[in-house]
Image 1 (cartoon, helix red, strand yellow):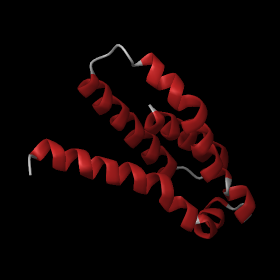
Image 2: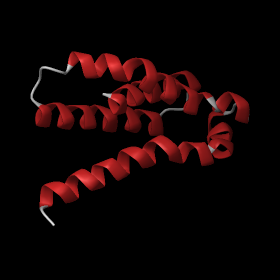
Image 3: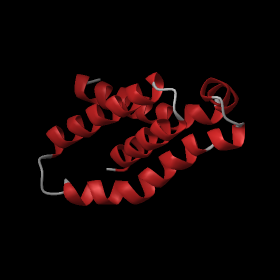
Length: 107
């Protein structure tokens, strides 16, 4: 199989995993952030809102840009947002970074 296809498949797997894994980790996330599980649910909700609202906006903004550099840039922005999510201790920062990641995934 060609290397670009393998890279694309691995990227799609990583993006999908980063989107869905926090759903199963909400009890641990709530404990780590010091909030209730229901408040930690904003981690999932903010990602969905980012993808729903920000995704089409990002897609429209990057429509005329070359596809490959756009995909790489959006993936790197997604990576940065997830690093911020993983290293912060604030529900607000986690929610904002997850919404940003959702917008990048939607784009």
